[in-house]
Length: 279
Image (cartoon, rainbow, N blue to C red; front, side, top):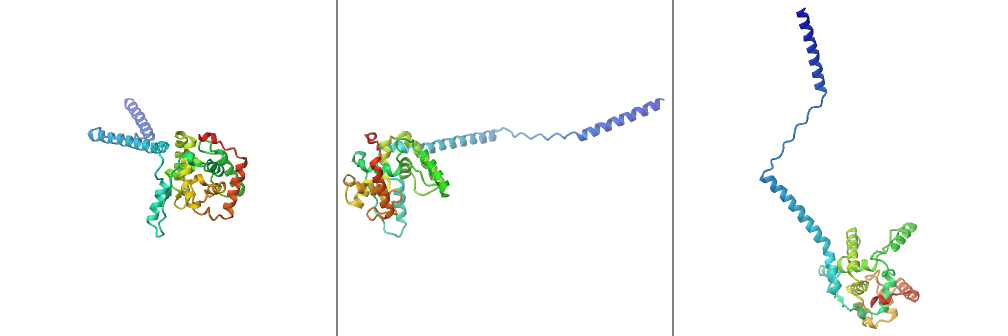
């Protein structure tokens, strides 16, 4: 009986150990623990170096974001002796086989610019200039709807502030990078400059022909008079040429340029130019 009981217990223990082995086989094996890197002097140095690198990146980013603000703040008080498009134009001429064109650029203060020309500029380029804050959302919406209706690319809806930013700090041409920078400069210009200063800058630095910048240089080159000596027709012609200053000649106007000049003069009759905001 003792042998029988011992045999029974042995079988029971075997069965129980078999179950244990089966359960152990089903259980997931524990993942090996990762070895911790020693936090010695080398590890501390690497961590400190990474921290300094992130700080320098942040400082560099802040500086890059503030450079446009500083540039705009400078032109609030200082008339730009040259602009980036002028420098690019002169630089490209040095590497060209074509005869070098002289740079024609002469600054005149706002009181010396004929109010008539400022009104023609406003009619031609941006009649909501004194209402918007750098971006004409109504004009953009109209441009999108017109493009959808005609099945053509969206036409430009640049404001005077957009074009002024591009004419001082940026380059010509179409790219998303330039457009993004133009928008960023526009925000700072509207924040730091009064409207009269933006208009004064624009009238002086806008390209009005190959190597010709500003209303004074254009008046002297095309008509042989200062800006104050422009006739109404001449003033409207100079404003009309702005969408294509390198392709159109105010002294030899084609049909399109004549049409633009006529439209400016017609709109002048009913336009309500806020000249009081210039004083």
